[in-house]
Length: 230
Length: 230
Image 1 (cartoon, rainbow over the protein chains, first blue to last red):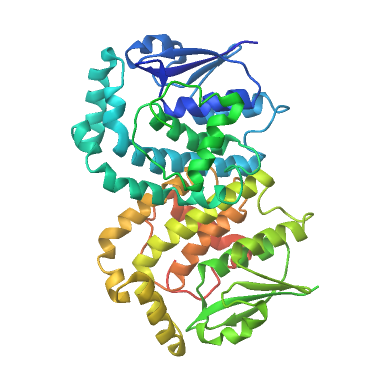
Image 2 (cartoon, one colour; image 1 turned 180 degrees about the horizontal axis):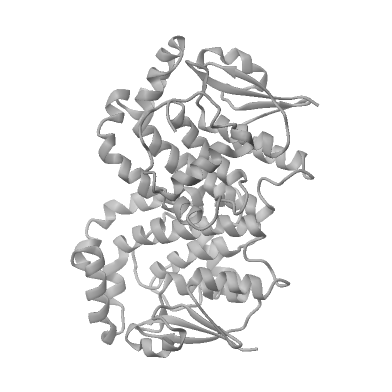
């Protein structure tokens, strides 16, 4: 059976969607060797078959699944005999808490630090669309959103405390081995890594060491991706 | 085997520690019928046998355990055949994320909204100690900390989004049944309920309905406790 992942591409073949990265990690966790199809913001006709216009989208045999959380649940349920992404029903519910924390806290805070960098690194044909939709969302110019980030990065680091308290005492958010909760949080860091040279973490931060472990996971899959910084 | 819980008491027999409430819920979850020993801030000699001065403290047979998270882990490991608090190793790791979110986000935000109410409702002999230690922590008078809370409560509600997104779609944070992650978050709400009349939640908020379900859990254990508001 063939599995395919449609994911978002910036200039320089950089994979930049924090949500696509969640799926990117979940696939090898389940032992799936997916065909990767990068698309640009302006190539949404390539995923029109999914009935909506957001990546990630996967096809898994005959099945089409979109939305990173729905994809994770599909993979867990379709491949119950392979390594678990959630470690059971309670683990799935709690991973969803972290998913929501990633969507509502981590990624918006990151966005306010790197969004102009993201814009600058897009493929030229994607820039107008991105600028228009994101400036509507933020209510101001993207360069303005990012302003003062050197002072604001401390607030972002502080908001990572729930992650920090875990990875200071165990190798991964999910315990001894990485699982879906790790992929959620790492997705955000891959977005930043592959778009911005801002130093989000201090080297002595336990989250920094965790991020390194995640970069090395699956034979250095993330470390080997095109990016601007580690 | 006898189990005992030492927990914090305010004036009017109100149990007010968010951390003691975590344990309060965990005990019946594990089917343990604990003897409850309320203590005041100025009665710390009663828990000196634990080698430290913070509640909750439990004695479980010969064993003395303190710190709500350590107690939860003890109960899970000592009673593996009873209903699980975490649903496995990954669930335990992710519950710890929520534990840290409760400690670093939920409870400090709540504290900034209700701390003067907490102070006002303490047993008279506890007030001087509480005022001194908390004003040191906040760096200002407790009445000042609470100021402007009618405007700031919206920020607290917004920070609950990771909880909201779960309980909008399933009855409890942990899934179909409550488990330790629910007790963590509910501990904070019991602190507020039993000390303050501030309306923390809008009635149409899914978190409001979840809180009602938690008040009803274990035959209305929390609903039956002395408090100021629901």
